[in-house]
Image (tube, rainbow, N blue to C red; front, side, top):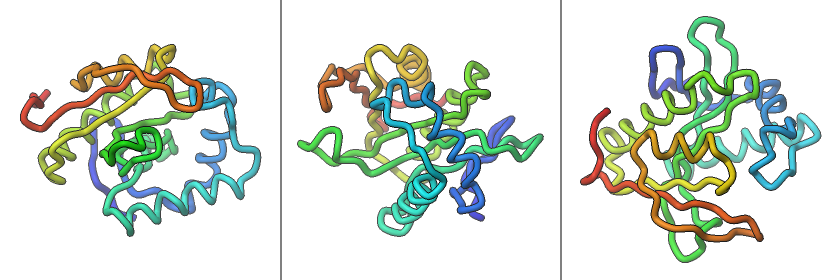
Length: 177
């Protein structure tokens, strides 16, 4: 297991097949998927495919979403980190910062804490020139996290009929928090 970062409360590490139960709990939850197209997974095989896909991104691009693990309990909280993305904005390839937490961990500041640590790592260690993110315009919590970590609202766009806010932050504009 490769650990990338630690925060006050969390370990941020590569996703492993041993995270299967946690990933299933995360992505089978209808509340988690409320702003993600309302299409939660139904089987652990689907969760395993998600893990394998993310692990493939580590090999192909050197980045991918990373597991968030509670330092005190070793519980799988969810994921955070980067993805080389082009699906949502086919006119460009960009580095997307994202996060997804199991419902029992919502409202505790973990999304902001881990995304901020990832952003710092992305600019300082991975030397990204720009990091982007997007969120459903109605997803108050996700939009708040993107703003709290310093991303700037750029514009709205649509993907498969869903209105999204688009954010970006250039390394030259980034301020260490």
